[in-house]
Structure formats: C-alpha cells, structure tokens
Image (cartoon, rainbow, N blue to C red; front, side, top):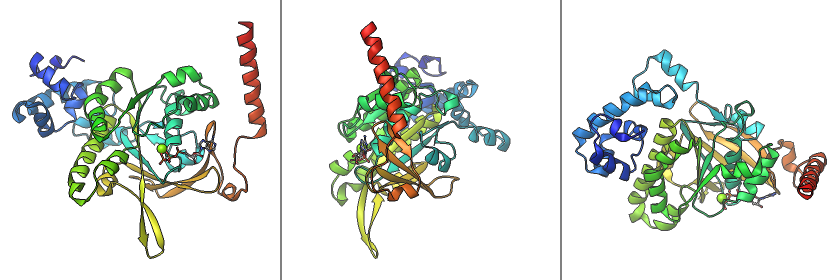
Length: 355
Ligand SMILES: Nc1ncnc2c1ncn2[C@@H]1O[C@H](COP(=O)(O)OP(=O)(O)OP(=O)(O)O)[C@@H](O)[C@H]1O
Ligand SMILES: [Mg+2]
C-alpha cells in the first residue's frame, strides 16, 4: 500500500519513511514514535498522529492476526487471536510435539548450540516445510534465508524438498536469500529492507543464521559490550515487530560459549539477557554420537521444558528415539526408502532420455 494513503503522510514524508525502512503501513503502526522520529527526522508529535492513522488502517484489515494486536482487545477476543497463531511443522514429529505443533508465527524462535549441532540443518528444513500444504503442516508460503556464515546450500534445500514431496526446483526458487557480511549489513537488512520484502513476497518464514556470530567477532572487550547489546537488541526488536505485524515466523540461530563451573563446564548461549529476553522460544541443541542430536525446549511462554531426538541425513532431519541415541552406527533412512529414492531417480532419468 502507498504510504501516502496514511493520513498525514505526503510524498516528502513518504520518501523519508521509506528510506528509513518504514515501507509498510504495518511497520509504522507497530513502531514507537521515538524510533521513527529518530530514524526519519520527522518531529515526534507528527509521528504520533501518523502512527494513529496507520493503526486505523491495520485494524481494518481482515487478513492479519498479529495486526489485531495494535488495539486493546477484550479478553475474549485476545484469547481467540492469541490462540489462533499458525505453526510450521519442523518435519520432526517429536520436536513438533514438544513445541505444541511446530514453529509458531508472530514469534521469534531461537536454536542455539555448539558448532555442528544442526542449527543450519534445521533452518534448511524449515525453509522447505513452510512451503508444504496447510494439511501437511506448512503455510504454503516462501521463506527468506538471511545467511551470515555463507553456509546456506540450495542443493540441500532440493534434497529435503524431494523428501517432502515438493518439486525441488520450485521449492528452492521459493527460498529468498540475503547474505549479511557483517553486523552492520545484518542490521540494515533487518531494519531497512525486511518489512517490505516479506510483505511483497508473502514470506512466512524469516531465518537469521546466525544472529550473533558477527557481533561476537566484531565487538571484543568489555568496553564495546553496551554498543553490541544495543545493536543486537534493536535487531531482535525489529524481528519481533515484523513477525507480529506480518503474521510470520522468525527463526534465529545462536552460538554458545563454555563456562567453567563446579561440575566441569557448561555451554551457554551468547548474547546474554538481551537475547534471552528478546526471543519468544529458546531451543538448545546438543550433539550425540554420529549424526544424532538432542533438541530441548529451554524456554517457552506456555510449554514445559522437554526434549526430542533427531538425526541429520542427506535428506534432512529425521525422528529417532531415545534408545537410538546409543546406536553403534549412524541412523539413516531405511533400505526401503533408499530403494524408493533410487527408483524415482531411475524414472526421472528415463523420462529425460525419452524427451
Ligand atoms: N548428510 C548428512 N548425514 C549426516 N550428517 C550430516 C549430513 N550433512 C551434514 N551432516 C552433519 O551435520 C553437521 C553440521 O550441522 P550444521 O551445519 O547444521 O551445524 P551448525 O549447528 O549450524 O554448526 P555451526 O555453528 O558450525 O554453524 C555436521 O556434523 C555434519 O557432519
Ligand atoms: Mg551453521
């Protein structure tokens, strides 16, 4: 929607708002007057009136659930809206179950864990499962992958898509991509471009892999801690605002640091209180033998701490049981499934030859 449709916004203010990253009516309705005023130079009182007008437009839209949260609701309405958030299946029955149905929209979910714990693998799988039909647990919508480590692999998206019965090329085309080479680029992408892109493309999953890596590398020493936390805070705040206002799910990954304690050492997610308070769901990953992993719901608004088990395979993550964790060999697809995959490949090759 053209911003000049918002009462009080003419072409000049529209230009200022757009270039500061407020390209949608929702981004204005859900931001604070102080933030918008600081970013655009428009006086705070004027911004207040613009926000009020933007809220009226958002409120009148039928489609968004999160959009309803711009006003004070009766308990009855609030219950209905808060209880109706969508979920994206993780493709893992165990994890979906402990998450109350999968990754929730209008929220920021964090997966943290040591190197090779499977954070990037989970992000790849979600970029596929969000595209599944609603009856299969998806939202029939594209994803955006914000990559800070250059570890995103379209080939892997294709393999996972094949396993879930999606067309691999179409599924990989539906994963939008942004490389953020440093913390400033990540901030700019989230703060300035994200809102408009997700709205224009109908994106329902935004992945940030990894949220904290650049900050850890760029801001060393105690003296830079306040600046680092402030920037990180702003990114998380923007991500949550976009998740709520655009009815989408945000998934971020986070690294850990080791801390010696009485019992040896423990691994804690980095980012301190800023990340801990900022994200809605916290999930910890830990490695076990071979390709086996444990995922734990550490913090969730209304879910008890619980854990589930999975294995990493070429075709994505698969459920395993607690008993499987002691398996002497890596767990993979059954022989029957591997055979089935070979058959499909043979048929595809035969079709290509006929063409
Ligand atoms: N096809 C596969 N079968 C089994 N294991 C695999 C397969 N592909 C990757 N892995 C394993 O997955 C792990 C990498 O997982 P991933 O890249 O998701 O880790 P991460 O948590 O993102 O780590 P980092 O912090 O380094 O980014 C590696 O241990 C790798 O051996
Ligand atoms: Mg990774």
